[in-house]
Image 1 (cartoon, rainbow, N blue to C red):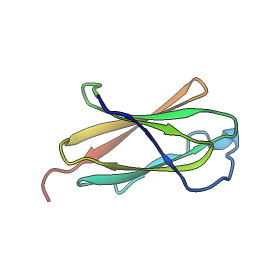
Image 2 (image 1 turned 90 degrees about the vertical axis):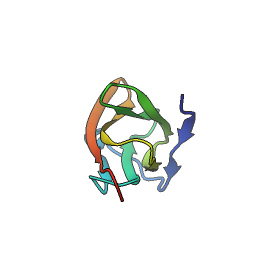
Image 3 (image 1 turned 60 degrees about the vertical axis):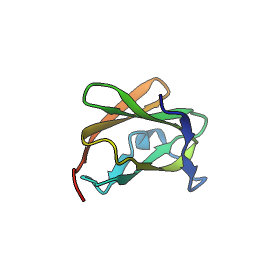
Image 4 (image 1 turned 180 degrees about the horizontal axis):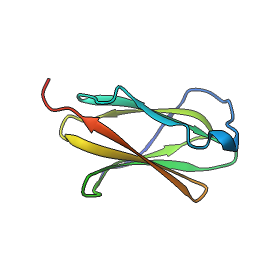
Length: 102
């Protein structure tokens, strides 16, 4: 199982509830690594989970309030992956594609 990892806090700016689903990754598709970003409103704890098509968890990150960025760097997985933002009882799942080869 993968260890809990913390996201890097890149800003102390707070998000409004309207921005709760501000979740993205770039580049997408990616080859080896991608950067995931998420905004977490003040006073809310959040996690980001990364799973494969079968639902196997391959990454878990604890997020802080404000803007977060996570560098997902894996070369031993490929295909369609999902990253799920979980905060305040709400889940937002997004698909990303890992390209094979160099």
